[in-house]
Amino acid sequence: MKLVYIYEAAAVGAGGFAGSVVRHLIVSLTGSTIGIVSVNIAGCLVMGLLSHDSKYALFAATGFLGALTTFSAFSGHAVKLWSSGDTITAGVFILVNVLAGISAFILGLYLKIQLVS
Image 1: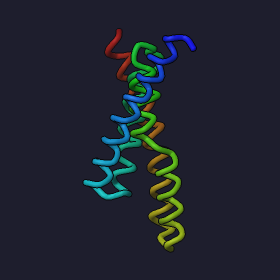
Image 2: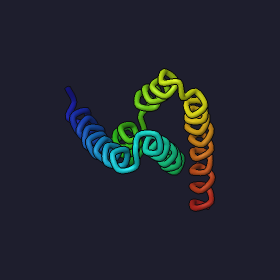
Image 3: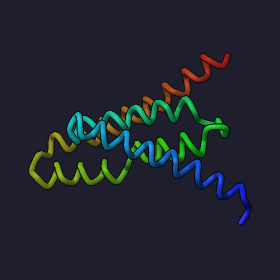
Image 4: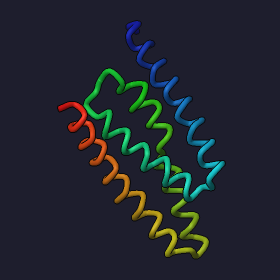
């Protein structure tokens, strides 16, 4: 195994550790619905800012943002809301996560372009 792979894996692991801890704290402090939406939207914005920036990709994008934003928590919470009979909240939760997440990513790209040029 090449040494570079070990450094790359360490960067992803360190970022993942930090991202998962931040997600846990935010979700614990704000509640699961608002917390999950918040970390997903913030993560999409930052991902847009960092896109195509290989210098930060492994630690920040793959590791930190990969652990901070989580499709499994989003999916599990949506199913939990739906199963409990709270279908309107579940639908809004899904729409906000998807539409706001994509919008935040696009905003991040736009801001990056404005900052670089």
